[in-house]
Image (cartoon, rainbow, N blue to C red; front, side):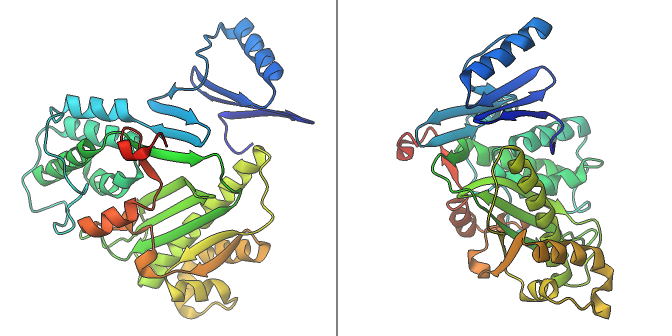
Length: 342
C-alpha cells in the first residue's frame, strides 16, 4: 500500500477503495453490493452517517457530470476573503508582483506574527486546488518566523487575486487516457537571502493535472544545470510514487512516463553513464534519474522554454505570461458562463 490512509479491496471483477481522514471517509468502487456491505460493516462498528454521493470533503467541493469531475474550494476561498474584510476589494491580476523582490530585510516588522502565520497556513490549504498561487504562497511561507509589512502586503495581494475568481478549480476529464507526463523546472539562485534555487514541477494523468510542487531546494546549486537536475530528480520520485499509487487502483502503464525538461545539460547528464568531477556532488540525484530511465519508468524529452508550464511554480511572472500559462493548466471557473457546464 502506497498511502497509509487508503485501503483497497479487489477481487475478480470487483474493486473497492476507501480513503479515510480521521472520521471522514470516501468510499468508491464498481460493485454497489460490495460498497453496501462495507458501509454496513462500518456502521456496525462505528455508527457512520451516509451522506450520499461525494459533494464535499475536507473543504473540497466536488461537482460531477458526464464530462468529468470538478474540484474547487469556493466556499473556503470566500471565507478567507470575508475574514480578511476583502470580499468587496479590487481584484489583482496576478498573485505576486513580478518586479518587487521579497527578502527578510528592507521593511518594518509586521507586529501580528500569529495573524500572518494563520493567513499563510490557510492559503497553503487553498493550494490543494489552486495551484496558480502555489509559488506565491511558497515564497511567503519562508518568512513565518519574522514577517515584515511587505510580506503581509504580498499575502493580501494573493487574496485580492483570489477575489477575481474564487470558483477556480481543477477539472478531471472522464475521457482521459491512462498515461503520465510531467514537466520540471527550476529558478537558479532565486532566493536573495540564501541563493537557494526553487524546484517546480507538474504531473498530468492524461490531460488532467494531478500533482504539482513549488519548493526551495535544500542546498545551494553551483549552476543552473545542477538546479535543473535536482528538480528532475524530485519529479522522478513523484512519478514513481504516483505509478505505485495508480497500480493500487489497477491502473498500469505499458509505456514510460514522459518527462519534459528545457535544460539540455541536465538531460545530457541523465543520458551519460559517466560521472565527471563537476557532477560528483549530485551523484545520488544522478543515480535516481538514471536508474528510472534504465528501468523504463520515464522517458526524457526536450521542450521549448517558452512552452514550459512549470515557470508558474518557480518565478513571479508578468501578467501576460501568467495568464498564458494559467490557460493551459486545466483550471476551470465553475461559475463562469463560458464554462458551459464544463
